[in-house]
Length: 142
Image (cartoon, rainbow, N blue to C red; front, side, top):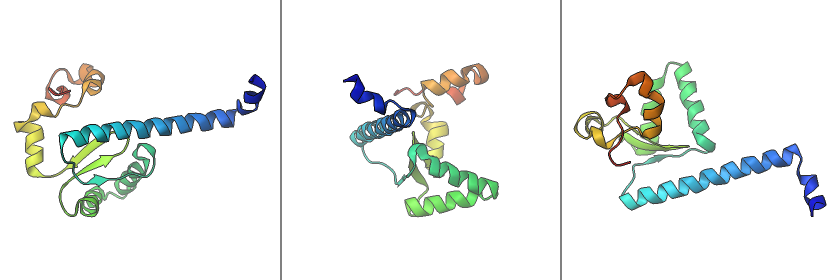
């Protein structure tokens, strides 16, 4: 049995297996996350990514930043993926909601602040630097 497996225990096969396993893990996590979100209700328009972990969107952001055209990037993104509305979801490695809607910003920063915590990992990473203030507040709904 070992003699059958031994030819496949070379670096290229191991690397290919690891990349494949990470890809499958990412897809399964994304499926589970989308299922949980669907149970809560509707979603905003999604800005899809085609490369793992949203690398394609990251390159696009960097390209516009280097040209000092960040504002134009967001106008194009909102128009293309949200039809002119100003709230979209970026569905890369993590779910990120991008908004410039005044009412959404007001809710996140003021009226519903406790509902929009950054999460335990962020709090642990930045607690020493920022303390227990509102910038590291933990969500009440975890």
